[in-house]
Length: 166
Image (cartoon, rainbow, N blue to C red; front, side):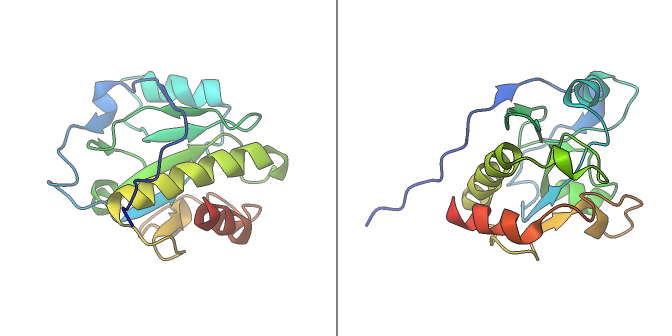
């Protein structure tokens, strides 16, 4: 049986400011072996403006909208997004932001979970990342992180079921 690559869900290219990420040649330059799950603490449009602001010094590879699961891509996977607050983890991970707030579970919609899970599954397939909690982590789990996302209302069991079913 021929192995097929997991296809990515539809994404829309919205480039972050080039001042907010590092150009690289991953996975040759650095292995990609984590997916880091974030929550924006902003609306999608406000977070998008932050990624586009050259003074912000922050970005993520992707962001998923709450209402409909729309995915924006802000940094190419071969490049290093500045999302984890830890250079080693930035070099070795794909960062996926989710529109919403950690204390407002109404933002964590079925559409968001499904779209994000399909994206995470495709990333894991592309880089050979195991679809486990040891490799799909929250921002809060990055060593040295001062963030608490995705927070207590993020349903990890549900999310990993969807990732593994994708």
